[in-house]
Image (cartoon, rainbow, N blue to C red; front, side, top):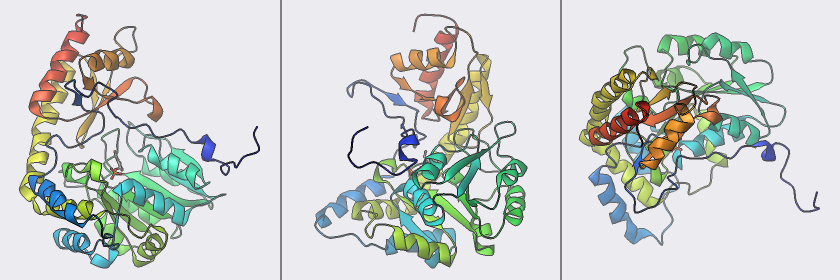
Length: 367
Ligand SMILES: Cc1ncc(COP(=O)(O)O)c(C=O)c1O
């Protein structure tokens, strides 16, 4: 062991988050369905706003993202004072962990919840505590059973990535009412725009009614701005105050603020992205089922697909065969789901290509 500076306890226990980046030759045509990005890309209005902001590179951005927060408040009918913008929802999720938990504390999440929650717990020195799921769905009673006097934060993605399942608004209300007031319930609604279920709510109503709930949203998914890193949260005054004290003062660049604002106003583009998902996801799901694969029911812009645990036909082999054809999916070992691959819903043309490749793979043809 050297004598140099050492990170504090817990940091070296973290397995670095590995994204779904391509790693393939840039020139090759790649169908990237590994990161739940938008099938349609960004709104042209967002691209225009991004370009128009480029002549202000020498000036610091508005540290309060005021214009963007105004637009969010108007569109979502929320109190602007409850909104904080961040560099992706990842930043906001992390800031919440930092503000509310530390060494000796516990952070609870659902067993197949978004990977960042356990990373955040370890990064702040808290203990990550996974609650078992029922049928790849968050189990409110199992979450509550993990809550004790050391619990500070509960993170739930709703809908959840990677399972694609969701918790109904009545179940979420039941969870909130059974949680001690000192436990912060973080509702990560990154995929809220894709779900149409009448018994779903992204969390705004719970935030308005309680002091221990915060909702986190992103522009990386339906708005197609993943590269710009724009997220936002809606929370009670005390949570907003805490996050504003510890975030970096200029966390959102001027082009990012401008592009997100323009994206928000292009409702037609957003609706096309949702319509694409509504059409392609059931079609893709049915084709995979025709091929004898198990697809977990999903309300998001992705599906979790299970492969048989047999040589040459398992998830690793499927991943490799698809990759060889320039199709990037996400392996799920890090989520404790090694027999599954996660596939985002792309355009109709791209997903037809994925089906064709998987059909060849399943029939044992050379791919
Ligand atoms: C559930 C969930 N929350 C948060 C994020 C992070 O999104 P962002 O790009 O806003 O940091 C993701 C990204 O995949 C996600 O799936």
